[in-house]
Image 1 (tube, rainbow, N blue to C red):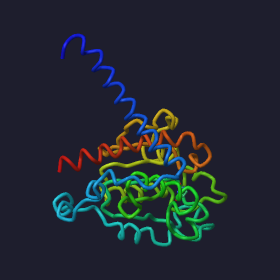
Image 2 (image 1 turned 30 degrees about the horizontal axis):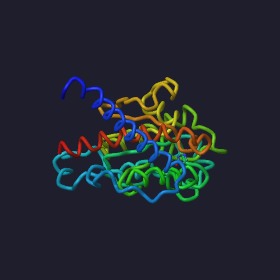
Image 3 (image 1 turned 45 degrees about the horizontal axis):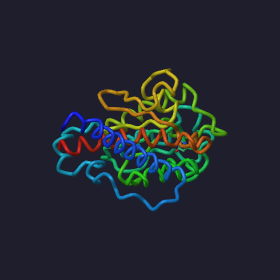
Image 4 (image 1 turned 90 degrees about the vertical axis):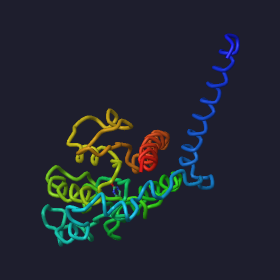
Length: 249
Ligand code: URA
């Protein structure tokens, strides 16, 4: 490149970069508005769920299965939430998912249906997954607290402490490549951190060697839609790790 050509080349590069960033933002905004046709799946399904052959090698001795953990929980009465719950909401999705989402606690709909994220926040989560080219069957979704706190209050320390060992076992059984924590309660409970969510969000953390991406809770994003773009950006980082890992296999 000649010396005179260099600034021109730089200008073109920065224009492409701006275009790319704008494209990413538009994708995010499309999720915000939900009015565009779904994007083509940016990730092969195998980047999200482990192939069966790989499983046999990677997990010769899985700690316990999700079924075992659910059985161990039984008709759980380890904290007071059993008194007011309708259903214990254990988790849903692929038991061998590479990507795991952890929320806070079931709400009214989840309590009725026995499945996490099926209410309004869940609809938004579904839309995010869809825009990312994923679906609920490919990933695993659960909560820190498995029973609904009355009036949708946050689970308290005692309730989290009673439930956390089961969450840990779920993670050990699934062995996800990446965990996304949704909101402050899930982030603090998993990482045992008290740092404000805005200091952790969008920054890679680790839990026992597993990369953890804290992001906003969908209920918050229902109230503050202008922050959806940030979760969109956090998820781009998550997908990049899943992609790199799939390439390395
Ligand atoms: N909010 C959560 O944190 N979890 C759910 O399952 C539903 C709403």
